[in-house]
Length: 158
Image (cartoon, rainbow, N blue to C red; front, side):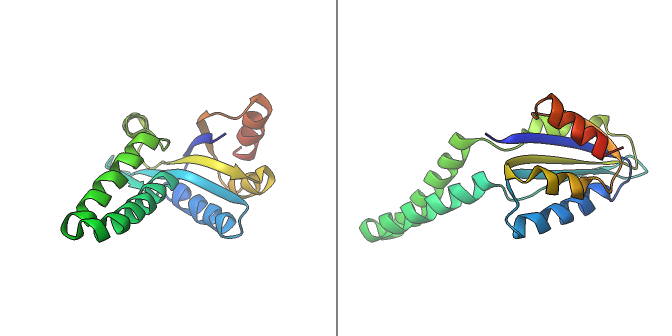
């Protein structure tokens, strides 16, 4: 089951830097993400959202490419267009990433000079995850961890 983790960090660059550390875990195959997003609010109050490629997007792209390739032989001019449309439909039906409305809610409530990290985790080594996050200070906004996991995350961010 996927786990949702949303953290508001005390400093502007912390979400981006934490994501870099988590990407290192991903390359080492110690964590797998379904979706990620970063929200940064400049000291002047301007908010920036960075949505990264999610597992849903990757799955939809692969499905669209396969279907488009097969249809291209039968209907050459329309195969690519049909494959792209079917890939988009697959992505929409999976819909397991971070909700855009939830990102917007956090973006509007995040104080200037802070950042937030949204993670939808497919699989992780909890100790490695906590080790990366332990170097930052922040607040847990939301998580689907059980009570013990959420408390461990809160302690790691103190």
